[in-house]
Amino acid sequence: GQLSVGQSYSAAASGTGSRSSDAGEESPPNIIVMYSDDHTAQSIGAYREALNYGLKLDHTPTPNIDRMAEEGMRFDNAFVTNSICKPSRAVLLTGQHSHLNGVITNLQSIDVDLETFPQLLQQAGYQTAMIGKWHLGTEPQGFDYYEVLHGQGPYYNPTMRTPEGDKDYQGHTTGIITDIALRWLRMERDRDEPFMMIYNHKAPHREWLPGPSLNDYQKRDLPEPPSLFYDYSGLTTAAHEQDMEIGEVGGSDMRWGRDLKVPLHPETGEVNESWNNLVKGNSLTDAQLERIKEAYAEDNEYLYENYAQMTDKERLRWRYQRYVKDYLRVIREVDNEVGRMMDYLKRENLLDNTVVIYAGDQGFFLGENGWFDKRWIYEESMRMPLIVHWPEGIAPESVNKQLVQNLDLAPTILDLAGAEIPGQMQGRSLVPLLKGEEPADWRDAVYYHYYEGPELERGWHDVAKHYGVRTDRYTLAHFYTHDEWELFDLQEDPEQLQSVYGDPEYAEVQEELKQKIRELQQKYDVENPER
Ligand code: SGN
Ligand code: CA
Image (cartoon, rainbow, N blue to C red; front, side, top):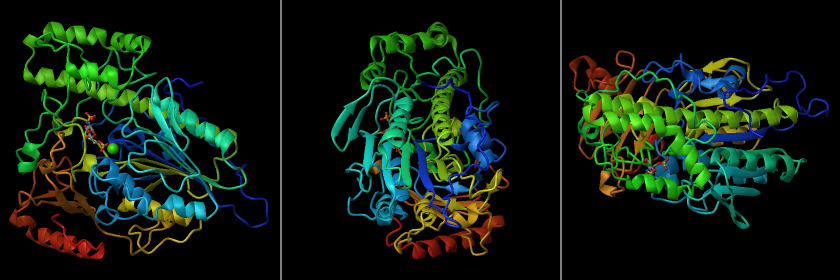
């Protein structure tokens, strides 16, 4: 059975670790990677004090993930190399930047011949499993077992792809993914070997359709981010041309039916096509559909009655509240399931010698700039939440501020397993950081490249391609299809509202950062930075 949402897993056991009894010999740790889809740091209680931009929640929706941070290490400067789904997952598996692993946008599938950390762990004697969102096209390689969603997968009643063919499930996907993961841990793995499991939630990806938490936040409003009504006046063409506005109706921005759960168009009274898509796409049963309609009914009635008199600002506010509540509802469900997983590890006495890595595959906008979605080099989307729980290896309440990346996870995991890190991997093991060391030669800048521009005609959220660099204080980005640059001083302008590119006061910094970009392009074998 599921815990009620908001309950947190009980405090970690101490002293009763599963260290091998052989004198002095440590068994290699088990490893669980949780890479939740679109889970952004602004929605995690543990990050509330750490971030100086964007939505600040007045409560925590994530007691279990917070607990992992309290008992382990929170990374405050973790970034993805390319803020979109497939590319981020390919970087996780290969430890290589997108231009080398080939998955530069959501259009590519991962090449089955690439060397990935799960295959190397298998060779090193680990039992491996891949459960939940895969989204890399080709068949998962390097796993003793897998059970994954097709593509993005639905919020309800998923069909899972397994080595033996498809399996159908009834219910809410977030709980089902955990059930499958727990079944594998309990009954299917070989207990004589250490295990590595990737346990990936589909939530909180669009369309944020809650299950158990449907009725949370019914009677209260959530805070707004300071830049909710921003007009992009300090930014370049790309920001003016995007397609990710919460307030914009129609097109590829936020849709009334599917995203906002408003069945009828508030102006015309006609059924929204995207509402039908929501019902169909999730194969909702009558009972599920009734429960969903019921949860939104009162607020929708208010909207239908008042829409005509509402100002644009009020309309955006209403849409923002509906969006962010649903986002947080599905986050609470993820958090609850993470708690179930941690409880299992504790009961089985596995907690101390299991490294649990909690991360999002990128960040996400929660109304900052009036937006949802990701893609940008901006803080909201480039930052990934990254929390590591490992009682045997990490001092509690650790906070790390080094610049780290999803690129580092494959080398880190191999290092934890005592396996060799192949030369083609471009990240660096975080194990010294986990142990509290501060290597003097740690990187002072991260390289970023986003490739899914409007010319691909993907139909949603056109964002101009860009590459750039993020240091501890600055972000410099080149939107090369427009040949425009943006420079942010994150200390002075944490919300990134005013680019200071071209400002004489920053001339020197600007030159240094351009030089840094050239250095990194060379270091990472970027042959064609404007592809
Ligand atoms: C879908 C979503 C987009 C989302 C992309 C990429 N539209 O196309 O909102 O940005 O996926 O997401 S939807 O109407 O199909 O939901 S990603 O996580 O796979 O990169
Ligand atoms: Ca994603």
